[in-house]
Length: 112
Image (cartoon, rainbow, N blue to C red):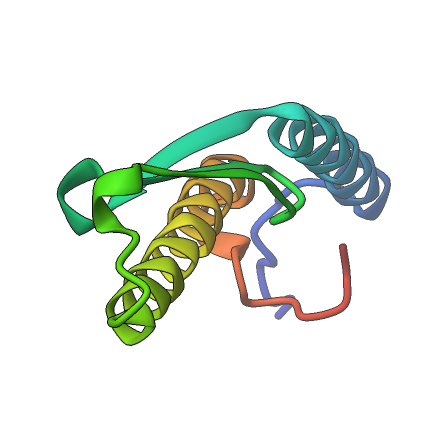
């Protein structure tokens, strides 16, 4: 008696699907890297522009926050703003890639 093996996609079809997923990911990555994001910190006194490559493009500081006797507060706000900017880009990147990879996201490290 022969065992019935369920038919699924052929190996060639699976390879084509993986290649398409890789192409889609590369296209989306390039698109995301070209985008720019604005983030503010300290109630809007610090504004940071960052691109999808996680490169800081500009930092605008409202003069009201600049106090020569309290540089520590300005430093804290800058650090918080930069961290928030990087987090925003990372979150958007992860969400967009998950739309492409679906259930395979994170499950095949190094494959893509």
